[in-house]
Image 1: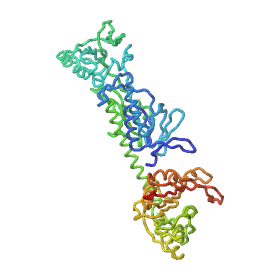
Image 2: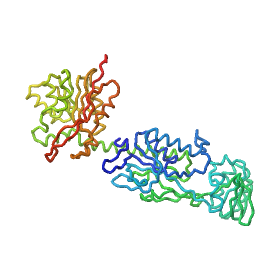
Image 3: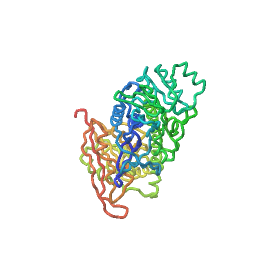
Image 4: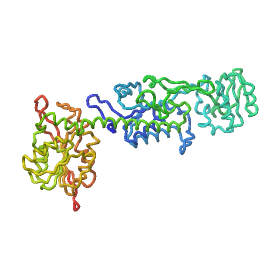
Length: 532
């Protein structure tokens, strides 16, 4: 994974993430946990307007039943952070897709993400009745599974505003024998509907509801337009569930209407079962994608989307790795060496860091990885080392063999891809200089090199320090090819004595013939002997 940690572009100070999640409810946080646990850099941006804020408790959430919504969110945020994700308060004002990446505006800054998950939820558009909105989520309710148990056996009124009202009546009749259907603005009831209400013991009250009334003890009932008071303990309504789809629409996604009993009950953004939309790189989860999703199902949808996003990134990473690998394949290196005809690409002289760091070592067995045309291996052999040298390029090895024969040196040459092939045996010195390959392959090679160092032996690795990324000699390739000695030293783990780990300056000549200072990453470490 090439963007496991967020980083800042030196020039533009733009934060980059594998994924940005817009909306920090159950869906968004669950997705972020899945992504962070897969070692993805993930940022959750939440505007602090949870749909269920008025509710006192969350229900039908296994092991968390009865937990306040704010506590669920706090626990979820802590889980995201525990695995290395970020959660911040803020409002995303724009999302633009450009060159396969998403530019996300948060306040006065912009971040870049490879993927976006929209978990912005929905708005409950309530019936326009005075006093109703103030009791929403407390004793003005809509979901029997969220609040039904808490109002069991109470006086429950069901407000008719669409044809789905009888469905609500039947669900709440399961919870209480004292259910009243307030006809209000609902459609005319058929004879069959009235018969069903009668046999179930549901009271029918005709007339428009003009006021929802409440006192210190909570809801007291409703008052009809004719002044009649109907005493109630809970009022059930049918909001219109309108998707918070502004960002989705800006990306070209159009909300679709959701119907029940022939009535439009809300809107949502269509997606496949994993949450992927028709816009590449954009996922949706939670109520934005399913108007009837509850907290636990939203969390499940978030997990599904998070896993799908990670899988999508894995495939992209693999494709990019293959493309990058081709630039450093055997045929690519053979072609580079052949561009100089029969002339050597390099000088045939040893690297300066090798001469400096090995001069005080007692000659023994040595393994030179990425030997190229053999300059380092030949120098080691001339100093009394018994050398085995390996390279991926057959052209380079042929020239290295010619160099060794010309100097009368005995060196064992191996044609091998050390990213795939473990080194056989152990050596007193294992060395590698300026090995150019993609990060994952390079890390595999360095693990193999470390494993090939004998107890008491020395590992010497030299490369390009990424501090030269922004210098008078721009090297954008160092973002992939560069590494720091400190990071490599840390990767060795226990059992090593770090003798040198630094970015060492040296003078070089740039393509225009100017003298410049660049930095080599140099690590020299000794594997502890059994008696150390």
